[in-house]
Length: 144
Image (cartoon, rainbow, N blue to C red):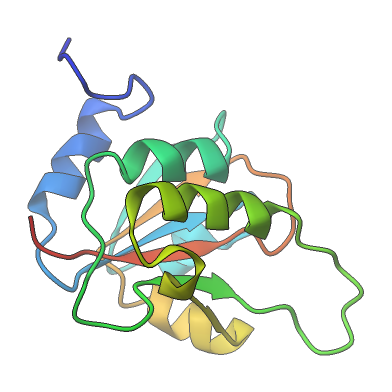
């Protein structure tokens, strides 16, 4: 056990977060995301019993966001014509705002298939049990 580390951050996940360097990317994927096929060249960490918001909040306690890019946080944009609502994005904005002075302006959107392409280059993908649609979020690591 360690003091000050959120309990949801497993030893495996902490190791991966530590291994990551500046500009490496981490995907926190919802339950529908094809984590295993997208993560063939990455480390895939299964956290099926957890949601994306709780993981995002815990990770940002120890994970610096890149200050050298405009939007170190990327969301998978809703496909044109898809009537899906994305209330989870408001949770993400509040969480990011708590840990980064840029707040919601640190968050950008990436078209769905471009998000998949970027995810294939990620250092790691966390596969969650999140049921919200379009809840995939990618973080770009900064420096301490």
